[in-house]
Image (cartoon, rainbow, N blue to C red):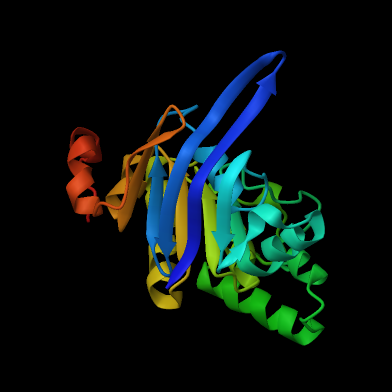
Length: 245
């Protein structure tokens, strides 16, 4: 079942008097349960595409559909509702609130859910902290946690609202190699167990090595898509090393 469709989407910005084309005529379909990597160098447009899918930004032209709804036409309140109920976010800088504990950081977005009782919130926070292996650190604040632990809190926070889609923007960029691999393996396990769709913006060969499919972007244009990851891995094979597929 299709959960995301990007149809001839473009995004332009004004930089002074100069127009910058961050994304140019991109079309893409993403199925439920995919573990997909949007790959490309810095400035290629991959984060812009992720922001459009995440309803953080709007396309200058074209259409974006999330779960069959055309979000290109939605107002600010509707977009906020989609982000709250349908999409989870994981960032390379973790984006945890420093004054809150791990438990409170995971719970915080759920406080805005009118459909969720205090009991259900508590159950979901406990469940996902257990899932990422951080139950014993529930009372710790971010500055008392390692980088890998903070990213695990961010993963629990992204999943606690039971989203259909999780968007991960360079989630391993600030982690050492071993920790980054552990975090990736955790997300892969969650993807397989929960059938949650994961969409990564990345230039990390380890992410590409685990992906079901790789979408490659260069200069704001889609240069390779809808190909099996095994086929396209050849492009990156000198960098993949011993990553297990």
